[in-house]
Length: 483
Ligand code: UDP
Image 1 (cartoon, rainbow, N blue to C red):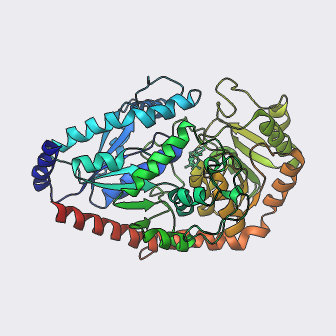
Image 2: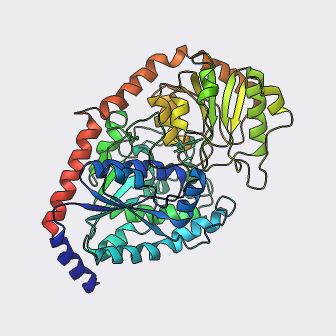
Image 3: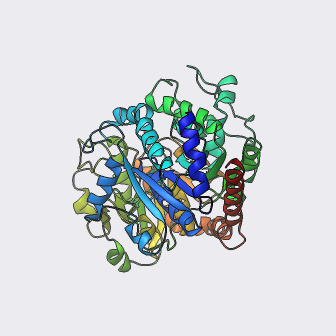
């Protein structure tokens, strides 16, 4: 430890001019995308960034792009951004299907990854250009411990809403009041979380609704939020104006900066840095031939699974609605063992008005003028992208923060309709609500307003721009003081 400290101060001397962030993305699609855009944003603001991917994610990305370029940031570097690229092992064989072996994958993130990260940090700290700070996804279980060991700052990067952060941060209060962690959790409204006026237990993240808290993911959440308490700063992919009370309450504990939405420089075009883990089908030509606002976009994100029964109900509801659609159906949406889960006859019956693809460039699709609605699982990136594109949502949450995001979309901001959730799909409801959503009128005013909040936040002098500048200023002054 003493050796590590002396290496640090010596090398900090050499590199005082330019901050160097080690940015480590959580190895899941919905976390990698904002992390890549954050890397570009930091580098555009004068940082040297070393971006760390796991070997498995790296290989999957290259396979999806069908390219031989060994460094996803080569394009960014060609435009003079100082982004370096490093790989670490998550401890499992690269080719292992992590979707099919979910618990093993999570256990590797819980127990193994940190040792590989520590080795990398040690290597870079001993180089000519040591790290100023570690920027790591809040869900990692080691960043405060590792940062402390090397005497560097830990910036916790939260890719979800401030509301979700606050609920995890205050898990002890939920436990204390009997809303979480017992076999008969209370079902009444929760009114004691700082900065959260009230929330129903059914709007909590799925992990906080479960009575068995012994899963690997629970252990990750518990440990990660212990680590988060040791963070120097939190940066969050949200907008101050949309969650002002929650953010103010969090700010009392430690600096919490809303810097979202973190989008690529050109939202509706494919990014020059590859972000997708699956090959993107091109939907533009098909969409070009459809009337304005007529197409429903359907996607349940990159991670959650649908039951076969829910999938069937949704598919029949989509058929009955007679609405045109693009459906992103990941090959593992039900399970990697069931790669063709749609009901018999669905493809033939919908051929004239529907398109089913394994993956697409979602931002390109959502911003196409023909798309008028989004049947979504309410992943936070999807919600932000939909609002940015002015597309109202039909919400079918499946897992994790998606239930809490639905509350914001449906109840707080009124830019979408609730379709129930996991295990509750009903074909009649699906078709009725799709028609209601595609009518569109009901949500026009609200979605324009919420979209404006996003737009204002990232325009010059907007809250996210100012917060980002304050974050950099505060981080740098602390690093200089420390060195
Ligand atoms: N996405 C994409 N193509 C698709 C489906 C999703 O590029 O066909 C992207 C989408 O734009 C979003 C991310 O994958 O940025 C999914 O993140 P989200 O938080 O919505 O859900 P998660 O996958 O984490 O459940």
